[in-house]
Figure 1 (cartoon, rainbow, N blue to C red):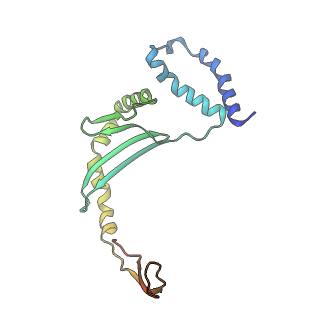
Figure 2 (cartoon, rainbow, N blue to C red):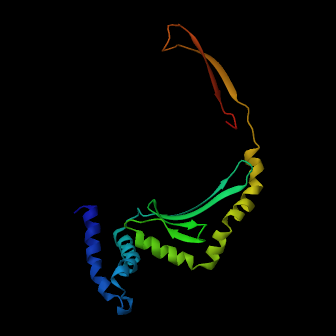
Figure 3 (tube, rainbow, N blue to C red):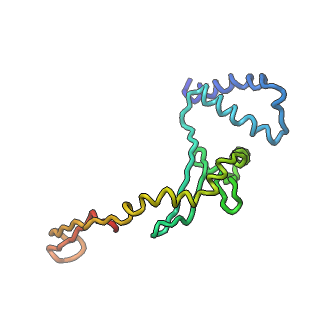
Length: 175
């Protein structure tokens, strides 16, 4: 029996355990998938030894040439699929996934929007970008490095001339 068949068999063995859940967990039909998704995910990861699922949190600060913050983003992804992102116009996390994981994206957004400390940090995102990037801005942007240059003889491939000079330049900053 192959590895994938073993994983499937392990999941099938775990399905009867769902009946052991308390009846108080019963929810309307449209929310039942939302309720059981974390449970099924946990069971499948715990029983099969799967290791390919990745939750990713990313925040970015877009700065102009003077180091002034212009945009701030904060997003949460699951297996490279964006679930929810900070919406600065609405001042809340908004679902970004409208496919199969839409229910999970909605629940996650609602849950995060109830976290007052997180909401305050996200509202101050642009200001925090300025505060945290200013100490490094000068050393990163005011640096320069002169180019290294070499002139070399080369054989041309697209002309009738027997010899041509090529100029190679590298290692300079800013480009």
